[in-house]
Length: 614
Image (tube, rainbow, N blue to C red; front, side, top):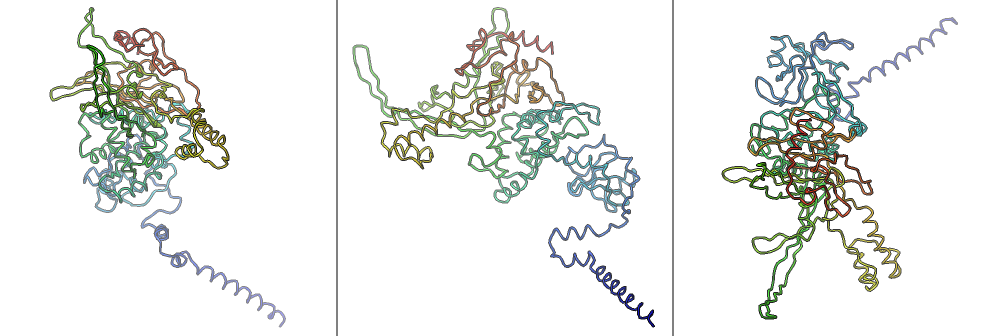
């Protein structure tokens, strides 16, 4: 009796434990998912839990992984089916590299797998890899390099390394390349885009922005909703994709094809810039920067988009108009003329500065050779010194002076003139510094009142000066305190003032106006070396800095040095007259011989000699 009574409590406890276990098992994932709110995120998780039809078990390795050929994969081209030419639900064959639509029965990708025996495909939108015709998803870590090349992603630590490292990487096509220093495929007469893209891709501020897709995707879609007429979202999205592939550190090949971004450019510009048609790089740059600014939701404010933050400056225009004119005879044969001039000051924003070159000589010298004139850059910039004036057709005189300097200064030289019959090129060489371009003589800084002037003013007038300059007057109890505050404000402005620029990109024109082409020169910061790009051809040598200085420059991009930066030394062969032009302390140009005063000098022989050496 005692043994039976002892077993019953144990059985009861075991039954209780079993009942508890049963209750826990009843609360399954399906019931938990049903109890959760029906949000988009929960619906996606519920679909992911549903097993695929015919899917292999976990740990299964696809037998067709060895058929993948990474050498034929090229994700730079437009993502359309090679059969139906549709651009939705497109898959890329990982064996031959062709694009096909769909993966269900009867689709082009499905038929391609049956007919040719190519089984591995990747969805170009979702980045998922499937095996056809079995139609199951392949999960394999060894395929992550393929998904990365389809859509490269970056980290901030990697971007900082780009400007320091100078190591070459070996691509699968057998070429060695530097990250961000790759050739661009010329599809057909698209050199105008290639040189512009080389220059823009090496603007650090623009590069760091477009390498992160999350920074501008929401802005583009919001701008499209508010201003659908002026916004072109595909232009910005495709350029950002091109930028990420251009700086891809794990590329399968050592060059980039701009096919997709050119399609977006052609559509957004209404075929103003198209494949198979020569165009002017400065016209494309002006259009592209303005359209991208609007597509990113930019407005008239200075820092409303990354475009204006990087490239927008401001020029001060002073228009002098003669209001009243009086003449008076002061002596026989002498007349005194008095003019009452009214000046009107306006401010205008700019993305790039255009400088006119002096006219080239029409005749040859005694040795029957053409002169190649030279002009210092500072002579061309004298237009913005606030003193040099130009006369308008109305008789008014206009003077220019820069009021705000951009972070990146784009300079355009008006080298081409055209009419109804022909196009002419000006071969004048511009002597420009590679480093330390001082723009202080051409900037209208806020005037600093003198000590005597401030002492003669009343307290109310000093407070008005502080209010105009947005100076905090708290703690000022006397006239001396107000004067000290004003001086501290101007001392701070002068200390944080940055006016020196370094050249980071140069676009030049080679050849005649009719049959010439464009080249781009880019500076590698870590290696401190210049590279020359002409489509897929990349050239570098020890004399590349001299070649840059002697090139027929057309567009240049200068980067503003931080305040208090040390003056950099320009390492250029002093035997070259056209290359040793550097600014002096006063901001004017200095050089050897005729190059200093801008007179004509024949450097054709030296230029040809350098080309032969290279």
